[in-house]
Length: 155
Length: 241
Ligand code: SF4
Ligand code: FES
Ligand code: FES
Image 1 (cartoon, helix red, strand yellow):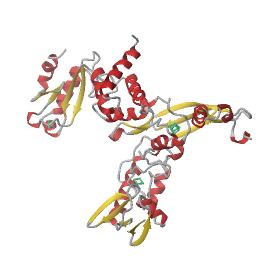
Image 2 (tube, chains in turn yellow, purple):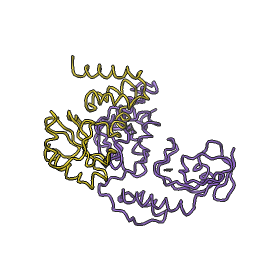
Image 3 (cartoon, chains in turn orange, purple):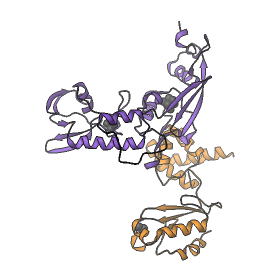
Image 4 (cartoon, rainbow over the protein chains, first blue to last red):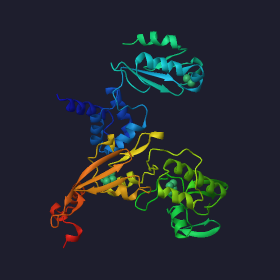
């Protein structure tokens, strides 16, 4: 099966889950993102066509929400909290250490597609600060020295 | 018909009419940047703010998107409203310092300088969405949209390069209040440049005189929409019988 028809098929089964209803666009894109770890261009085009929503409008939604990514993401998502409470406890140097360890800038994905590094503003666990969230799991009281061993837990 | 007061004067307006339209009909001028009669109200620029008192409640609203109602009192020139407009235009002056249109509007509102740091990107877009609305509501294409969010927000083609839906009609160019979208016809090619993307389109040469008079895609679109044969549309205005 060609890559494009594979995309078509995947999208089609996602659309079926939502009765091919335009008003479910965001939920549909969320499922596409879950499937591919990002929103591939062909997938966005396919959603637009199948739902009969102009491509520009699907693109507008896809670029509006931070939860969506147009670039392939890593297998693990690392969110360093940069909110006020974490900031005063040194979040900036944690992020810096992360960037150094992974050799990427905040917002980017490592060459080997292992990690995507991002900053967030307060994840609501200020008492645990500095907080890092890896694949949805909250890790509190992170220090610069703990960054390397922490990342070694993932493959 | 509803009766209400605007700047102390009692006027009548059609139900469903906006405060802005009613004001204009009564020669009361309210500044606007994101209004155009061809598209629906949108309320993006916030320049048309007015005070509306309804019963005991006073609110500041966008007159372009606020419907008239029986008994309301509208103040188009209150101190607060003037202050808001000046702030808005000051921000816009910093956003697009090179725009003549914005400078003129600012002057009209008594603003000549801005306390904010001017943008240096040379981009005159004020995100009023007139272009995307015209393309969607008037042309029926929706080839462009506002993308991203926050400081990254901009009008663009999908993926910045996908112009499949664009028929190169130029409606977005004509409606833009600040000249942020550019269009050039040269040697059989039309180039349209939105703030961060640009596309070239082939123009059609008139089958009689050979003058490049319209984009091929626009003619094809017109033929499909109207049912008129394409060949009949491929003759420029001056050569049409
Ligand atoms: S030129 Fe293209 S983007 Fe602009 S209004 Fe026409 S179809 Fe829409
Ligand atoms: S600031 Fe980091 S969790 Fe609140
Ligand atoms: S004219 Fe009303 S918000 Fe722009």
